[in-house]
Image (cartoon, rainbow, N blue to C red; front, side, top):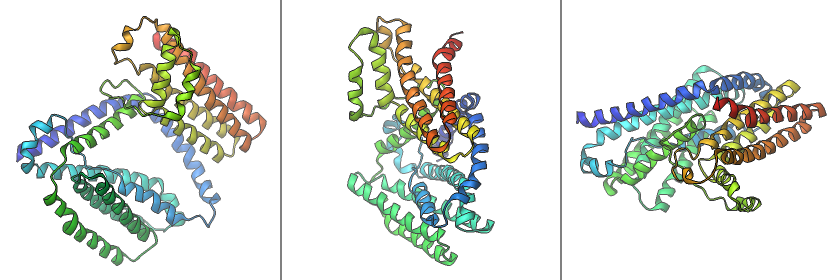
Length: 403
């Protein structure tokens, strides 16, 4: 029994030792400084945003939608590995303490992220939902308990192999979360919430707990959930440093395929084609690019001073450039590209092609957006800032990295 519990503690410790090393590299990359600037800048405009927000804005529905998503997402971490399908599977009957540790660990981590999100929404909560620290604290405790209920239910759901039945249970939890969270933010009496909490507890023991006696554990799914969680962390870390253990995931995007018809079939265009395919299909480079551009546009529309527009446009443009630079290391851990009879200069040309194209598109979008919120000189200033940063990214930074 003690060996089973110590196994979970050892695996959790191994994961965090690895994670802390990458988190230190992320911190040293200047990312924390960027977050600090965004925090200062965002806090200044948060109050103005609340004043601008119309009184008719459906605050309760907005909070309900955001928090319901937070309650429904998330899985129990087991730290299972592929080899466990052979070595731990025979010990399944003795693993209940192991799974309890996993549930408690996941609950603490999910509670942390729930509180973090709720703290970001606290000014909005106090302005539109309710006032007082007691109400805030009570809401946080209620949401933490609701998160625990979701985690233990989702752990039992993973036993269900039928995809339709599995999805049906997830949608059922979503509906329950929607109702509970809406009642919580609608200012219902606490005794009503306590009754609902008791009903959820009874529902778990009379329905979800019985799933344990009907279906066995699906070890392959538990390993897949753990791998997906770790790969998500690796993909974030890979944006700032090399992560050799990152397994590339490929997503087919058929609508973008015609774009590659413009790349002619020649030897010197090999890396143009490869980097383009990697950007659109592997490791979510494309998703990060779109999200940063969208956030930049939102901030540009929200800022009402010229220097603020310049700062936001330059900041998000440079963050995008840093993310796109990681394309250069995408094939470093692959052996096959080393067999190509191509010089490193051809590889750099392929990278520069996509950096110029993608950053040029973002520079154009940011500049055009300023015409809707500012004057012509704002348009010119943002364009000059973006083009300067693009020149620095494409021409100056590669030389610094090689020296």
